[in-house]
Image 1 (cartoon, rainbow, N blue to C red):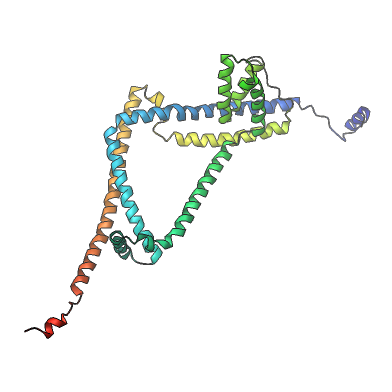
Image 2 (image 1 turned 120 degrees about the vertical axis):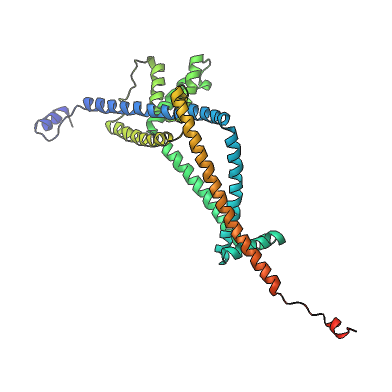
Amino acid sequence: MGSKAVKNLAQSHAIILIDATERRQAEHALYLRYCEELTRETETLRTFEEADKPAFAAWFDLEFPAFLEEYRSLDLEVQELQCRVGKVFAYSEMHGVSHRNAYRTLQDIELYGEEEELFDERAEPEENFDQDSKESKKESQSSASEVRQTAPTTHVKSIYRQLVRKLHPDLREISTERETQLWHEVQKAYTWRDIQKLETILKELDGGENAELDLSYVSIGDLIEFQREIQRRLGFLRYRVKNAKKDPSWEFAKTSQDPKQFKLLKKKLAEQLEKDRLNLKNVKTSLEEQLDSWENSTHKVRNHNRKSKPKKVNDQSECFDF
């Protein structure tokens, strides 16, 4: 269709010619704003994971060594008791017997070593459970990787490829110290899907901080899709930051520099640790009482069986007793 025909159609209102420049600029500005928010959230989470948590862990080990030793020992004891009680419940459920009978049978198993034969029926379910657990782990890992890749994949890969062509050591005869540093920053930013950082590095390479990225090749629809994908990524990051704020190591580097806040943190931790220790002790006591009740019942049954057992008659002594 010629230009004259287009003009005629436009004049007759059959089509409307729209200048998309303003709309593109608006969507681009909104995209950049989301990128900045994404960068802030990413940097916040990165600081927590790479600085606050390791510093807190090192300080905690030095500040509460006695508690850690006692807690770990207590935790091992509880795990052993839970294992014993769990075996009783599992055997009871599988063979349709009471918990006391299951405990008594398991005691005989320990004495006579028949555990493999008695638990043959459990072998297949356990294997299935292991397979299910492995599958669930794979699913959780795949879902985590899917969430992590919710950043605008096409745009990220496009920028990353440009940076690879500019900075990859194998494609350059000589790399300056700054270029080597930028290459490492690119790898880190790509791992975290930090779009803003990748764009900043590309701007620097293309002509400094004032250089503008050429997004003329990107349609308005793609810009809107980029915004949606960044918003999904933002939602995931904000959820992680929200959970991280509940961790005692949140902003530990900042808290440790404030004597008042640091003292308050130590007090809260000490109180929480004492609660955890008491709770673990209560769990241990409850498990021990459960096992003791089964043990006492087993002793009563065995004593009763011994008393009610008939005495053997010695026929020869009765016949030839002179």
